[in-house]
Length: 283
Image 1 (cartoon, rainbow, N blue to C red):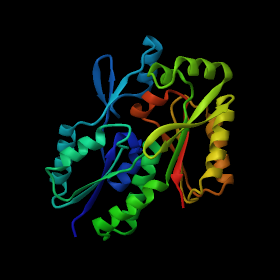
Image 2: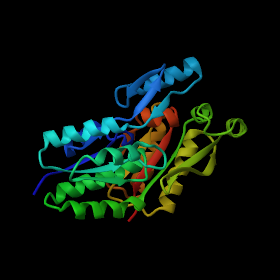
Image 3: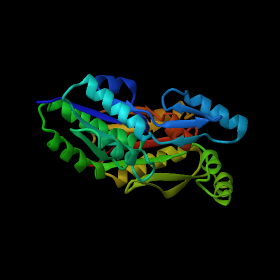
Image 4: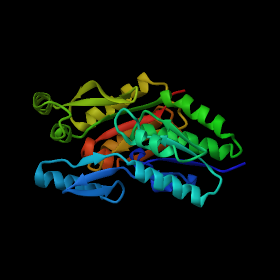
């Protein structure tokens, strides 16, 4: 049987130890800053925050283009002759990356694309489900693996809140009125992936330590998340005491494995510093 190779975009925020352990291939998305194009992963996140402090502008982000996908898939095929590639992609509702992958895939055989309809930890949860299943069942047929992955996509639940509204405001993601009201009242939006789209579903009032706990508790109440694995997500700048409290709540809620995921440059460009999120798979 030919080998199955899993791949995804950098917007999944997969830590290097996991990509190495499960041999997951990752293609970078892009951050544009000072008129320079930086592949996601090549740019320290701190540079994004420094750029904003200096200019009061946020970098822009761009999708992986068709040519990059062609090179990416060609390299995998060259390194693993006869392999089957299963690419679990960043939501098509928030980026053109997946459509570009679809165009590039026309040149290849035994290449299958799955729209995960999620980002960062929500996408990571789907990719890691596929990776651990493949590890436990190395002889699984590609069609069966694809079927199982597609089954868990609706079960991947992601919720996060930004540390401040500055990046959302600067990027035109909320109105100035909403920004000013939120800043004055210390209101932070909870953003979730609904049918692949980023949607503000509720608002929390208070300091970040209060907001993060409310978000996590409401998330765990609303969704029956598989207790075998939970992903907690943070962007640089989140206070360690908040991280410690979130982990305590997760353990009290019966989670066996808790993994912290740092938002990369692509996600941090939209979420800003000090953000908090949670992701997992529903039973």
